[in-house]
Image 1 (cartoon, rainbow, N blue to C red):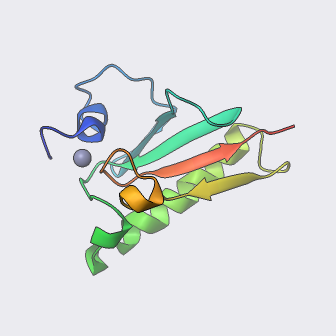
Image 2: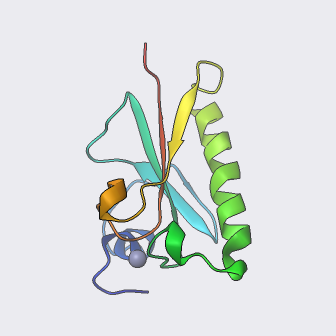
Image 3: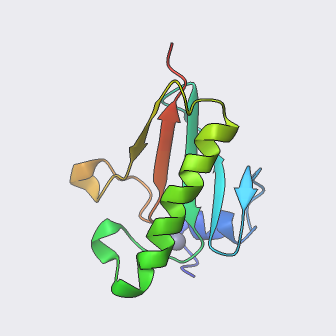
Length: 109
Ligand SMILES: [Zn+2]
């Protein structure tokens, strides 16, 4: 855990955040600055800076991120209407918090 990292603090329950889902690997919560009617963040508990920093050992984490996001889309009722999954990578890719996270965006009319 990186003690200066916002998402490590959230995942470690050091900042009061409502989790829509949590297991041993990851947490899911709503983006505080939503860019879509439904905007969730799926965040691994392990501190990984970005997609660039993934190692072979992280394959199961990536798989779980995507499978959980699929389930969350269904729970939010946007699976049939459609949604977007987004990983921002480093500043040039629009990444703001340097702890890997998957955006789930949807619910557009
Ligand atoms: Zn972190």
